[in-house]
View 1 (cartoon, chains in turn red, green):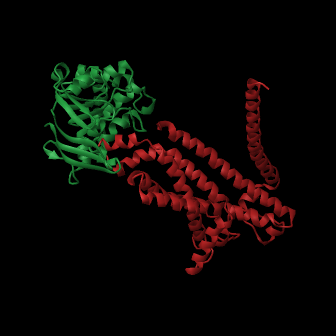
View 2: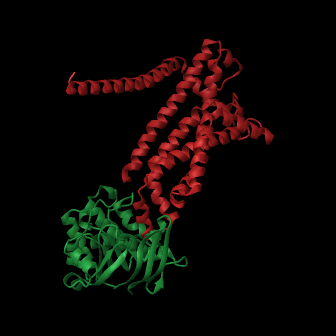
Length: 284
Length: 250
């Protein structure tokens, strides 16, 4: 085979491998969504979203899972706000106040990487231990705190990556006008807004789909919590508990819960992209 | 009042970047700092407004007197110093906000105006001063990043002028621009020198020749020669200056 032919064949081979890989990814997304939608739609009804479960629900009777939807939204909403409140100052301190060669910055990033890799069940076990220490029962507050701990490293590392590429010239331009570092943060926020949106989306995705950490901390209940001290149901646990049932109607209901979970994640992803694009309007 | 630099040494880690700089930069004139790459021109400029502080492992020695006050040392109010000394950098760097907000930014952080109307008036005035108003009128609320590079550089100049500085530092402010935009910026500097003291780093000898009142020639972190532009260009005292001006090295 001459060199020209060899080059053509290798180019074709590499392209084929790439196409196969891409097809696997698309197939994966399509098959997951198809399975969830086809199975979930069968059991989906208005009462699934509105009617609280009763004792008979788990034997195939009437009732849905609004308790899990509301519980998940409570936990995710509160932990996202708390996570942002903790993470944003850390990211700004790392990137605007600390020097690049700072030892503290190095150790902080390493600590976040370690926390990033900790499995969620370990966070659950840790939260559970803390709750026992303080004599607390499974509660909405417990779930919120553990999920916050789970997503803080995701927030920090994702926003940190976005901020590290921040053009130094913009900081200098702001300082040169007499701005303090605190005043300059306003400019930084505008520039890294897409990064914050991405970090929030990733964190919410992780938070809303995690079952292991909330199992021991938020618990599970058939009612909607009215205070932070009450246990709260979550969608992943609604899927988990119902999917293991021997009754087909209950299993179908698990798929309906999975469908709601998927739709929430899809809405967040699409709206997140929309928001990111709007924020990117002024980005350099 | 002029800027006076006395025995300034700047070190980054163990490297000495500026060596015993002694200079007087006269007011209401254009002073061009020339010299080959890496000779410390930009470091000198960044020392004057203390932007050098954001460089890691930097150490300053000597005195830089701005309006008679030494700005080296911790006692000086750096934000006020920077407001007083505007900077136009090499690459136009609009802030990630609208054209209006770019010019208004400095006024807002320095709390210069109580009434929004005054702010609008000042923004318009500065955009007119840099010849940008007619080009952006009607779209001042759109993103500054959509402007051309030349327009962005004029916007950056307007942004610096908006905080009412006394000095303008320009770090190769025309090097990233096309010849027409470059000429516009040059003309602007010439028209502004009656109100501001302009200190300009340039790589282009012709530019210095066209607009400079005074010239400082630097080489390897030292000031080789400084003085009125005509004297430096026509009768350089130092052999090194003569070689640089005749293009033997650059």
